[in-house]
Length: 129
Image 1: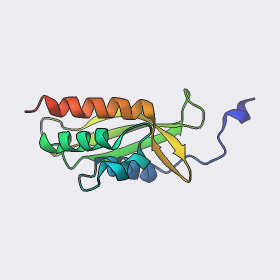
Image 2 (image 1 turned 30 degrees about the horizontal axis):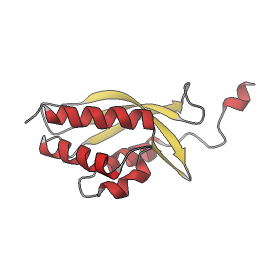
Image 3 (image 1 turned 135 degrees about the horizontal axis):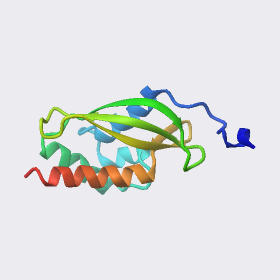
């Protein structure tokens, strides 16, 4: 039975997951182009998030993804601890557990994580004005 729980795709390289996050945080990409990297988010939410972190001086965000492993909650998803670094001394670096869902040949941020991240990013930035 244990074998059935292992998805039929390999665990993604941390660099692949880092790319997903870099895409999400890229200030030069419109939200409409980012929705492929995020489950269940609208272009408007993504634009708002990017603008909020930019306005707050948090951009450019950089990400370090450590030890991706299979999710215990959602079969086929991958969980990893992601360290988010920002040039802003107000933000500094902090580690957040995130989950990613398989999408075609690639990966995207899971709905659970994107909801949290968009809310946190937008509210973090909102307190900076």
